[in-house]
Every structure is written in structure tokens, then in C-alpha cells.
Amino acid sequence: MGQDIIVVIPAFNEERFIGSVVLKARKYADQVIVVDDGSSDATGEIATAAGATVVRHPVNQGKGVSLSSGFRRAREWNPRAVIVIDGDGQHLVEEIPGILAPVLAGQADIVVGSRYLEERSSVPRHRVVGHRAFNILTNVASGVRVTDSQSGFRAFSPRAAELATFGSTGFSVESEMQFLAQEHKLRLVEVPITIRYNDQPKRSVIAHGLAVLNGVLQIIGQYRPLLFFGLPGLITLLIGLGWGAAVVEIYRQTENLAVGYALISVMLFMLGSLSLFVGMILHSVRGLLLSLLHPDQER
Image 1 (cartoon, rainbow, N blue to C red):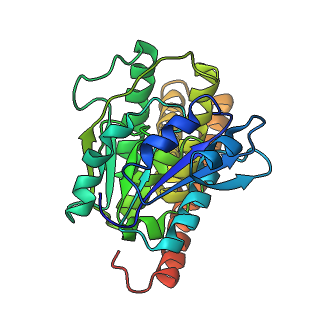
Image 2 (image 1 turned 30 degrees about the vertical axis):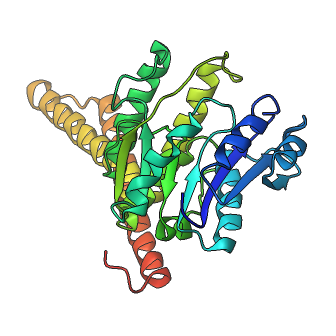
């Protein structure tokens, strides 16, 4: 499959599947890196026995940290492409060539394997609903549209791999990749993949969804402070002005000052103005920092 193809597999307590995933991945890659994220089982030992290079975290730090560690190790080999795949056996390793193809052809910097481009997978209904909600939120906030923002099966060009250090610690890291693609003008495409749901989820679906939502909101606050703070602030300010207009109208008709309404109007106006200015300031500061860190990049 070419030289310097590296597969990165973040894994936490995946001893049941990690060995077979590594063995299959080695057919398509020159190196397989497993990031053992503080597992309490034999994930690291089995991955080593299967022929993977294992990066160990002493305690569980989350998928985002694991991917940052995996990419950091992968960059030591100056790869032509990096594949990220989950260690739980849900992804079909045989589909790696399809994920790789756009990168190796020079057509993409990030390739997202989407379970929704074609009807190959029987995705549980509750997952479909959650994925669609996160797709809308992430697509609108990042400015980059994909059909499967939460897919963990992806390929990266050398340039994208070089930039792959994530602020997210948990499962919102996939959403962060869309923000990175927009910020660094990375070419992102999707290809269809198959997902197998053989076992019950290890985590509560609701708890997992809330954790991802919290992570995505943090990402929006970091990458789009004007949107995160400014838009709610502007809406709050306008509501305050509307409430103030109602106070004026009440006074005009009755010649009585609606003190309670007036206080609410002032409070909303002040909160909205503060949030709007915070968004504007953070947006300017972020732009300044980025221009200092990446002076050659057009913005």
C-alpha cells in the first residue's frame, strides 16, 4: 500500500478487539501505533504482541489527548499519510484503501469516513438523531460541512498530520478537526464507510452525548468567540431594547413607570452589551495571536 503509511488507534480497555484490529491494519500500513489511554486490562500487552508500537498513558486522559499523542509519534516517521481508526472493531479495516485514496492522490488533506453517504450500516435510531444534531451544530459553527462529524475513521495528509494537535480532550475531537480544516484551509472530503454495531455501548448514550455537546461548545468558544459570545449578546441586547420600548409605551399610555420592566430592560441591555464586547475583544485577541503564530498564513 505504499511507504510510510501509519495507522493510529486510540484505545481504552479494548483487549477483546485490539489484537485483531492491529493485525488487520498491518496489512495496509508500514506502522501501527496504539495509544493505550490508561487501560486497566491487557490492551497494551495484546497490541504489542500483535506488532503495534504502543504509546502508554498512565491514566485515562480522553480520546483527544490520545490522538495528539498518536500523531506526535507518527510525525517521527514523516509519513505520507496517517489513518485514524477506532480500536473497538466497529470499523472495517479493509476499507482503509478507500479512505487513503484521496490523500495519496493529492486530492484531500483530511478524509472523513462517513456512515451516512451510503446506506451500508444499520445505525441505531438514537445515534442517528444525535449525529444529525451534532452535524448541524458543528457544520454551522465551523463553516465546513460533513455528513458524519463524529466519525472516528479518517485519513490525514502530511500537512494535516503536522497540524494535528488538539485542544479537545474527549470525543469532541472529531468536531474540532472541522474547525482546524477551516482555520488552516485544509481540503476535506468524505468517502462512504461501513460501521458494525455488534455490542452494547460501553458508555451511557445520554452521558456520552452531553460530554460531546460540552466539548463542542468549548470548541466553538475557542475557535469562534464572536459567534459564541457575540451572537447571544446581540440577541440579549435587542431583547433588552425591545423591553425598554415596552416600558416607554406603558408610560406613554398610563403615565406610570413600570419599574420592574425597566430594571429587566436595563439588566438585559447591560448583559447583552457585555457579552457582545467580550466576543469582539476575544475575536480580536485570537486574530492577533494567530497572526503572530502563523505570520505567513492568509486570513
